[in-house]
Structures are given as structure tokens and as C-alpha cells.
Image 1 (cartoon, rainbow, N blue to C red):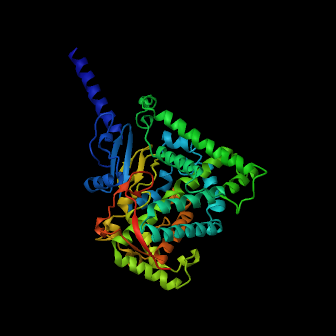
Image 2 (cartoon, rainbow, N blue to C red; image 1 turned 90 degrees about the horizontal axis):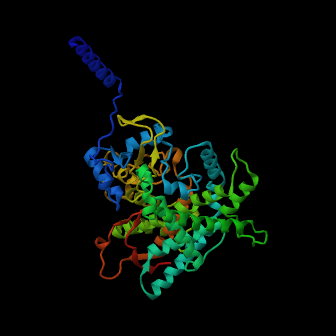
Image 3 (cartoon, rainbow, N blue to C red; image 1 turned 120 degrees about the horizontal axis):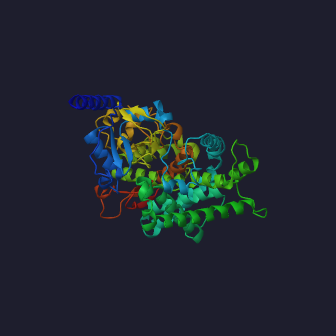
Length: 498
């Protein structure tokens, strides 16, 4: 009996060490301790998550991990690790997490932003780069951008004669909404009419749901709570409104009695592709609608947000304002307006745009990626199905990349030590549009939409704050959302120069 017990104990001990030795050791990135079941969900800050994650990077390093419900999240906060993620190992991180709001509103991932990296995705991206967002296609909409820019200038002229102040945030949102509608749909809505209000309401609700976590995303066994809280009903209602709106646009485009548009719009191009069916997969109405989302969702408020931030910084830094205005006015002289052709000859203006995008990247946390297999990053193990996000706001403040003054507004840095740095995806210390296989395909269109109004604002007017307000009184708080807007509208006093 004693011998039997000794043998049993020996076998148990051997099995214990054998199993322990065969178990693969995993070295995960460090991070804050969480609670059972919910992980670190209770610690997440709803407002300004980029600031919260930046503070954590100062505690745990440029790569750290958290548990959000049942999902593991890894956050990257340095240019060096961003390069490893977005270039060296880009293929390992091409997947998107299957989040309910994103999948529903993007027509089950048919939209490029939230679709999976499949043969369909690669064909659609190539189609977009060749047919929709090529330099020639972007240039074809130049008259639209310049006409809408002139409309905005006229409003400012009138306002400066009457009230003395203008709400630049509101004016720039109106400008981008009108431009996007004309480029995407081939028609101009009245800025204050019911059609524009409907478009904006649908757009904002779509953006909100694309950025919403559902219980089923984080706690698969608690998906019923999405019904209890009304999230599922809200999602169903929002998608129906979106789909009905887009279907009306398709029907209007297909109408043989439709008046000929002033120029071929994006929806006209997509319907031509629908008729030709040039792909290995069938291109359906749902594909057309999803591609329209790729144009209107990132294109409406992002350009406006960038110009508002750029003007805000120039008003806070008067010397930079004088320098930017002197450059554009010396180039244009008394002509009275700036065209898109002039922008290439305004290096300081471009430096101001880059510096504004660096300090206030319009998408502060890049869209989440998901590992397709086990891999390593920064010396740590990253298991498959891990959600990985780049905190672009933190990367833009990486001292290793930007030196001792990363928090200061210094446009001259892009004419000196960082002259060659650009936002086209090859310089990983500046990532407002992302990089790699999942980089924003509409970057050139977005930049064109922000440069022309910005240049004309600087050329045509001198700018000051309302009476009694000083530059240091300007609040720099941000509004939470997919795009990072200035929370308080920028209200300023223009003085006509041209």
C-alpha cells in the first residue's frame, strides 16, 4: 500500500512538472491591474481617451496592455513601435475586430474603414485609389471646393460688416458638408434646409454608433443587455434611416429623367462600376452604399476640425499668424483670392497644417486593428485576436522623435530638423491618416478640402479675438468622437484685407 502511494505521488509530481514545462510561457506587455470579469473597463475615461492612454504610457511604457471585458487591448505610444506595427509587421495586424456597431453600419464590413483584409478589400481599395481618390479625380472637383470657399468668404464679409464676429467652427462645418455633398452626390443642399439637416443627423448618428462598444463586443454572454439598454433598437433604427437615405440617392441616380449633373459625382462613378461589374466578386447596391460611406463619414467634419485647430493655434501664437499671412499675401499680391495651384508655393502654410495635425491629430487614436496570429511586438508576446491601437496623439508627443519641446506649437520644425517629415504614411512620428495597408485612402481628397479654405482665411482677413478676450483665454478642450473637434466653437473677429 505504501509503495502504491509513493508511486502515485511520484507520477503526480512528474505529470505536474511535465505539464508545467510543456505550457508555453507568454510575456504580455505590462499594464494596470484590472478586476475579475470587467478587467480595466471601470478605469477607462470616456472623455479624451487619448490623454488617459498617454498618461498610462508614462507609467507602463510605450507599449502596454489592458483587459476590456473579455478582450485584451494593446496600446502603442511611440514612433519606433508604430513603425514596427504599421510597416515591418503590417500584415500581422491587418484585421479589424468584429464590433457590432461598426459591422452593422458598414454593411457587414463592405466599407473599407471597418472591413476585413480580404481579396474583396484589396480589390475595393485598388478601385478607390484608381477611380475615386486619384490625383486627377481629386483635381476634377477643384471648382466645387473653390466655389464653396468663395461662398464662405462672402458670409464672413457680411458678418464682419454687421455683428463683427463669426463662428469659424460653424462656417467651416457648413463648407465641408456642402463640398462633400456636391462631390459625393452631385447636388448642393441648402445649408439650412431640411435635406441638409437630415444628412447631418444621419451622419452624426452613424459616426456615434461606429464608435460605440456594445455589451456583446466585450461580454459575449451578456449580449442580451444590448436589448435591455436599447442599444440594439437604436442601432436598428439608425441603420434603417441610413440605408433608406442611401437607397433614395441610388434611385435618383438611376432615374432616366434625372437632370444631367454639373459634373460626374462619386455616386455616378460607383454606379458605372456597378453596371460594368469589373471585379471577381459581385459589386452590389450594398457595395455602392458602403463605398459612399467611405467618402462621407471621414470627409465631412475632419477637414473642418483641422482648419479650426490651425486657426486656433495661429491666434494663440500671433507671430506665427503674421508669418503665415505674410507668405500667402506676398505670393498672391492684389489678385484677391488663393487657388489650389498656389498652395504648392506656400511652404510655411503647409508647415502650419502639419504642426496642427501633429498636436491635434483629427483621428487621435487610429482605428483598432486585430492580430491575425500570435506575434511579438516590442519584445512582448501579442496573442492572436488581440485588439491593438496606436495612440497617434501620444506618438506626436514622443520625445525620442520630436526632441525636448514636443508639446509646443512650432511650425518651423517642419522647415528645419523635421523638414522631410510628412503625413503620407512613411514617417511614423506623424500619423494623422495612419499608415500601411489600412491607411486612409482618401488622404489627398481630405488635404485638398482643408488647404483652400485655410489659405483664403489667412489671405483675405486679419483676425482678432472678441473684445476683452486674450489668446491665453482660448480653451483647448476637445470633444469626444471619431474626429477630434475643438469643444468650444472658435468665435473670432475678422477685418477685411482683400
